[in-house]
Length: 571
Image (cartoon, helix red, strand yellow):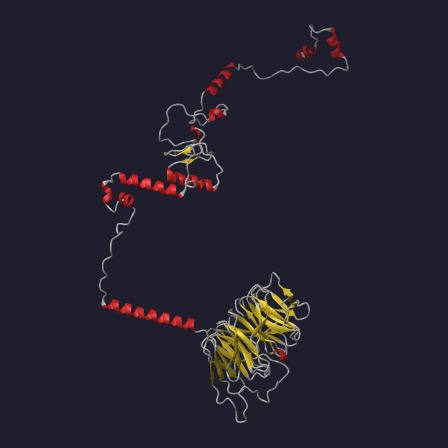
């Protein structure tokens, strides 16, 4: 209380005016003087110790520092001698490299290569700042020469001077030993330079026989290669295997039987194999029934041969056509079946007479034809369309042998050609994963179908009612497109379950349109119901890939399949 009273008591030395101002209501409120509860400390010793610490450098061996050191103290060098092999630490100066302090410098690659090569060639180089010369050797001129600003003649002169200097110097005794490095530095040549080879030793009897056999084999191979290069045309051959080409009435062997007609309007799924045709030595790539009647079956194989088989009678091979030098890719009958087209990997398209086996004409553009088709119109049976490997569809007039049109819009090899809309238009598919619709005779695309989800479609079939297209997609499904104006994808119809990825398995319809069938990569033939899109049946047909399948045009429950095992089966 005494302390409070003394604090409120007015100071005797204060004036009356001050006391009056303090007691007035308008004056500031009363404030107590600050009092420290801490004991009094003499800071003289603390100031002296901090001054002494600031004056001396920081000992790097300390683990505990009793004061806040400055940056100068942290980076100050260690006083006294340092062990020569002691590890370099950051305390021994501002270093980030064992050779000192290294800073990043922006140098163009050309300038760096110039100084790098100059240093290795002349012994000096300019630092990135360009103000100092680094290296043991120093340039003679004030402007140092580099390897890039010297003329070739100056380079040659310097090489000659250096070589003369080296020759003037006496060679050390080690230089006489070709195995030493000094010899290599002074000679820079192989020790065998200038020496003649010894005469060849006589061959033994075994070596002489081997040399003679090798020379004969090489000569035979060269002769065979010359024969291939000189041969531009393959010799066309044909062999008839039947009993006689004409019967007692003078009818040809390709004439269809008069009683051939459809046995039933409805088609049924085959159940068992009734016959096998074996004659091809390699895989069969395509089969086609004789148009309208189906009494003959044409097959193309990778053994470069085309065969035609009897279906209704003896079921034997009737004729073999040999005119291609490589595998046959595709075949196509004319409307009456008396002629057919074949396309081979020898880049030729041949037009055959079915009865006699003679080649009527040959067409080629120098590219591989993947698909061949004749215009289905009766008055345009002389017009040939071929999808080529160079992304073009080429149109020939077979009467004149001239190319009359080229359809060049695809970005990949053309795989299929399918005529729609009463043969006024045709649809093509390609390796570019698109479908394109063309007006016949006009090389302008009228409809372009390409979606991100689409895959390549190597086989397309037309529904018997001509309203739909079935396309074999390489993502293991069959897609259905409309043949009307918009060529829309029918999203409600999709046939899947088979494995066809990577193979151009043929897709086809039954003559009544009730079933869709397709081969697959595992040798099976799949049948689906057209309305419900459900799998109806699967037949294990071949050991390899089942590449082709054809429904007989008149026998409503019979199907022919072919595969890469070289067998054609009739179901």
